[in-house]
Length: 238
Image 1 (cartoon, rainbow, N blue to C red):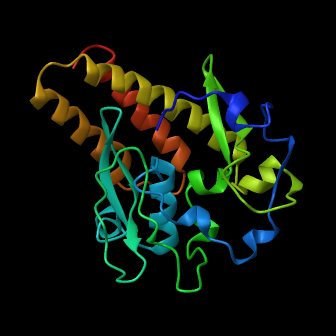
Image 2: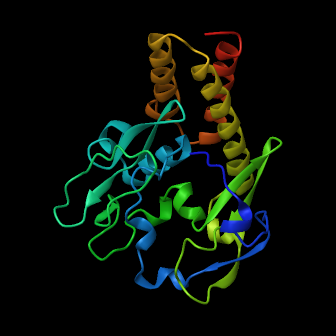
Image 3: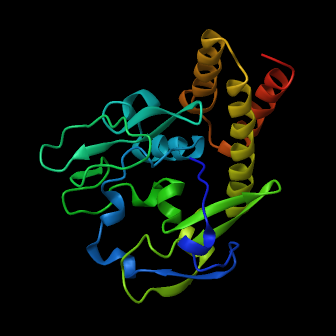
């Protein structure tokens, strides 16, 4: 989800790359799970996130839709996000608030009874970055530290790429760039489309092509092949 932000108000004023040190270390959260609660529908999942969840849990996209993820429209494009669940009842809540604000008792569907992440080794990129974010400029991106998001005191410095803990990080970051700018192109196509039927067809195609259709072992190679296929279609008109 793209936001208009003033970095001076929310960050330490610096931009980071993967090899930089950043003050984000929080002693393995020390049992805290505040960032896993009350997130509404803001934990948006990209294709790599879904691939990792499917592989890590041994499930399909359709099975994830049975209580763990849901679909919402984000800037005109249908995308999945992690579902929040009621803390007491454990039942799923459909949150229609697109601002990402969730109820105080909402918790991530993957948070276990001890308040720990049950998918930590293959958690989504959104969760891996926290409390960092990305800012995109001129076809690229850098990271920034959101200084007001995590209340843990006396954070320590850690190398950013270690904080992310993502295998083949250069390939992952290249994928992140490609997916972001491809989505922006698709958002423009949808925005300029006057037909609701065409808009729906575009969204259903993107959902099937990049999320529902299974990937093999080399996610990045297959993703690039699928994106090239779609570029040849959408860039010449729908």
